[in-house]
Image 1 (cartoon, helix red, strand yellow):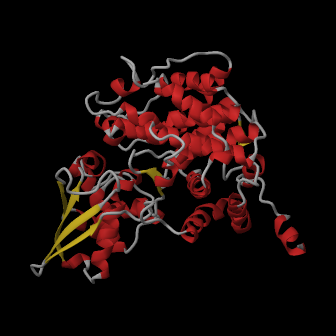
Image 2 (cartoon, one colour; image 1 turned 180 degrees about the horizontal axis):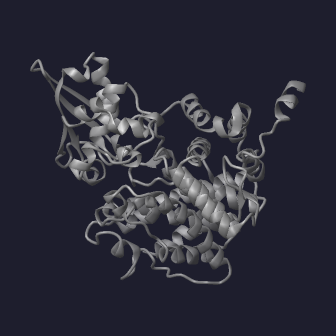
Amino acid sequence: MANAALRLGQFAATLSFADLPTVAVECARRHLLDTFGVAIRGQGHATAASSLRAMASIDGAAGGIPVWGTDRRLAAGYAALANGIAAHVLDFDDTHTDSIVHGSAIIAPVVVALGQRRDASGEDLIAAFVAGWEVAARVGLAAKGTFHQRGFHTTSIAGIFGAVAAASHLLGLSPAATAQAIGLAGSQASGINEYLSDSSSAKSLHVGWSAHAGVLAASLAQSGMTGPASVFEGRDGLLRTHGIREQVEPAALAADLGTRWEISRISIKPYPCCHFAHAFIDCVGGLAARGVAASDIASIECVVPEIERPLICEPLGEKLRPASPYAAKFSLPFLVASRIVEGSIGHRTFETPNLKRADILELAARVSYRIAAPGETPFPRTFPGWVEARLVDGRTIVERMDVNAGHPDNPLTREQVEAKFLDNARAALGEAGAKRVVELVAELPATSPTRLAGALSAGSLHVSQPDRRKAS
């Protein structure tokens, strides 16, 4: 088999808009819009705000690329870093469930920044975005969950390859140079899951850094630096250093390129928390729909795939009483209890006062889990939920959801995706400005990256747009 980097480089460099099926183009629009919204809202998070201040102090306003939802501008690489951090900091960004990769938060900042810097077309932007996703998803698929098992963050390890593929496409690199850039990205693939030990904010840096490093690797390759063609399969290649040799599947790296479109297999999150917990939230929503209240519940047992255990179930003591809003997003007991007590999960769920609420914590203490047997659930094809509630009157009620809401087999509607974007973006852009972004994304590829980037800047609210529409 030819080195996967060469095959991926050929694909990313030569993919054109004309090659894309309609479903890939429509998915690109959906996931770009969703990512813009979560990043704009994410800019208000303390981690994103402090990161932006740090980058501005280093970079100034060089390059003039907007940081979405703000009036700040940075060089392309730093804008990708800032927007990537903001897009992931709320844990509200999309997920390719089979590969467990949050790719749009990495790839969208790259294509908008370089698309504007290169004065690319809307067709180029979409082709680069799709190319990036096809590469990132396949790296995650080849790992078969073993990056996570080794303690690495699959999103950032796989995602940097999507970033470099997209960046190489927009920089106009040849197939050979793109393969060199992919090789260089392997030396920068990073991100460890130790953030889970104390809910530190490093996780969002993983995503921003992958976007930034993808731009850097492509730029270095453009200037003549080289990387190993055997970056994935070699003796010290990524699948051996970051994965588990006996379980990985190198053939998946370039399987069905250009005929099977992984961008059509991405889930959009309805809730701003760990994606593994979403179907469990909906399962206990089913309990509530049956009229079950917190006071009716003696205990709840959740059936959890093994790979989810260290993220949302353990250490159990910390999950029962999460110490921070971010920790609460990764606590299955807290999320289950909050959904039953509050009736919904949203941004307000993770406000600090809720972490101390006695009614939520008392119910969370009644939530336990068991590990699902192999084949007992459809994970990782979907992120399923399964709860068994034992009531104080002696009854047991079981709720299962095999296909999580927002998954491509149970998708959010276009109206739901647009409503999510507007809810996330209107505070920063204003109602008219947010609606203008919806229009521009819907018009892709007719919209240029430069025009789109301007609409995403809080310093450019397009006040003349309503007048032009009235005149027409």
